[in-house]
Image (cartoon, one colour):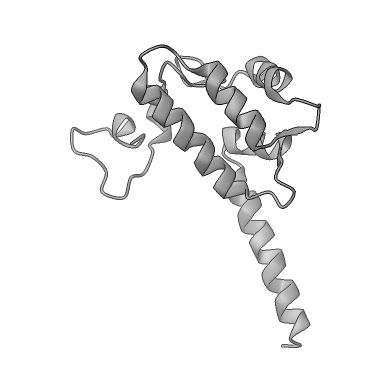
Length: 137
């Protein structure tokens, strides 16, 4: 769904990859406004988003906070934006899969700047090393 606008050709990418050099084409009305129209990250908007929706100052967002953010960011008759916003946060939650149910602010920042993938790869490598040591190989 969000891959096609970033595609450099008229044909969609069969692997649904998002072209980061054209990420600004994925803006929709009901998004969080953390990126500007040129695709630049706006740290102040990121902080404002958390100050608005992190109820209880937990340092992160739980499912309830995400629901209030979803309701608060919707534009009237922006059906594409509503669904895109929902699936963006669903994918983020599934990627982070917090054990305590709270997506930490720093982890969400990693999603926005793209460093989450290296972080997850390092985390996975650590788990693999621990399991190898546990089995004595």
